[in-house]
Image 1 (cartoon, one colour):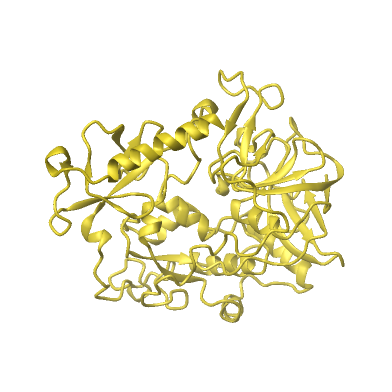
Image 2 (cartoon, rainbow, N blue to C red):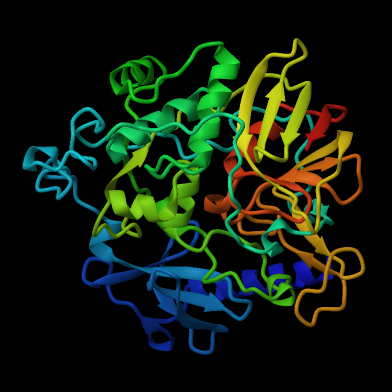
Length: 457
């Protein structure tokens, strides 16, 4: 608590020093707002006009190569942006003209087809909180200053080795489907509450598992090759699978951290384990693989407010009341049922390993926390580097347990998020149930203490 308070006072002093009004002769001027080529933007969207001499800040670069102003704790105080980007002019043309993915130029394998693109700028067509805090939790939010600290073996410490899939159902084969058609299938499943994991335009094991779960939920047999029927269902359930989104000043400003250190002692010094870039934050908001987001928007500078990009439209989170959760270790999948035994949601998951297996039998949900911190205890967890003391690691989407911690009645075990969503369902964990941050958040808002969780081998 003292460390957090000390840091908060230090950061406040830095920001005050940067934004305080001082005589022009005593400051490094950025120049007049209408004349300068670049501006420095604070996380809350304010312009930094000058830097007082001797301020305890220095320049660095974030993961995207943007120059950033960082304080002594590594916290980004301001991000350098082009002034013409921060004060953008209205779009003067259709943003999809001259697009290398334009289907009219003969490339139907990507995103130019009018079947998948909503033409024209749709500013804010998907709310910023599209997948976060849409429905209230039954439990109150944890104290945001102190955090709600989990104490478990973090899943991302498990060996990142692809595990062979042994499905009970036969493999599903798509017949010459393009990436946009596979994206439509993934979005269709996601909107139904049957998560395909990250949306990336690939027909992988998570999509196959989702199709069978959809059949179980609806009692119908989904034909993944019938793209026309899938598109018609999407039209009725929220619109096109790919839409336009306009990057806002808040999106571009963050706050972001320059990088996430590997050493837990270094993690513990940060105020939060926030996103490291605009693309990482946007990809998670729209349930996408970050590399795929960049692929859909070649050459785009995501740090410029007013930029129109293409994103998938996952729709609203699933709602309902979960009475039972089944964690299938073999399928690497979590199923959520209501009190009548109906399947209402399913998620790909990383569940245990041969060295650190998940529990067997039935446990219950003990508590639910959003934006949890993580308590590293080498006597309970594992040996991480040279760390031999208890460390309180701050909250954030890049934290060891992501944005959600659903504690189970078996001590140190839980259901939680992850900083690496693209690895869900493809790697093993240290015994807990690991979901993507957005899936974990959706599930958390449908459960409450006392819900049973059954592990199936």
